[in-house]
Image (cartoon, rainbow, N blue to C red; front, top):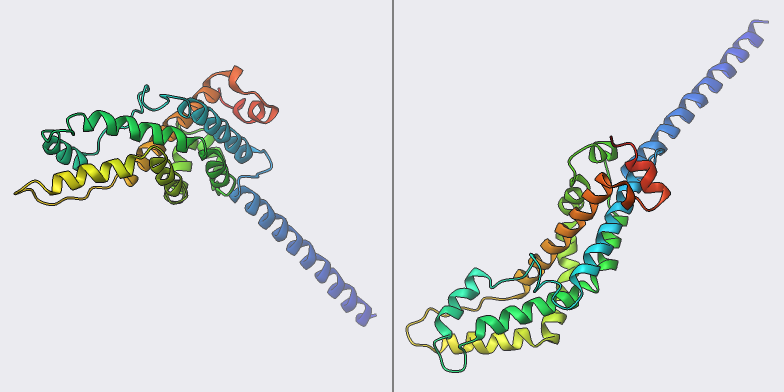
Length: 239
């Protein structure tokens, strides 16, 4: 009898242990979902959809003709390049260098932004949202800032070749090289070689993030911009 009692006790212990392990596994699965933005309440997925809507809106606005040039996000001459221009514009044939260069940089950004969507979508898809509720109930730009802080470096690296190709498409880098060469031939000037790539890339990203933020704020505050059941479910929690 004692033997059967011990066997029953052992079996009960094994069942109880299995139940505990099952609970731990369920918790681990939920934690993994939360980290990937796929929690049970879909908050993370809703935030990602809002960011994708922001990308679509930003690309649509900035990729048209004068999308950068005629907007608050107009790309101006970087400080180190301005030093070159201030000197070289006194050289015959280079008087309108600043005007030409600004036009070329903005045109290149407008071309490049047309190819931004898949780069940003990949970043958003791979983004790990550690505390979706805190972002949802945070500042009106919390999701945009989270995307920027977690993904800007990788977005910069992925977008740079696109920017460089676009600068070459409008002949901006070749034109700038002639300007720099003319500057470096002027006697008694310290030789410089400022590059446009980094400046245009960062300014293009700044414009994109600014308009993603505008869309996020719109979805948060305007029920009419919650154009899917998921957005309605998630952002409907905001009062």
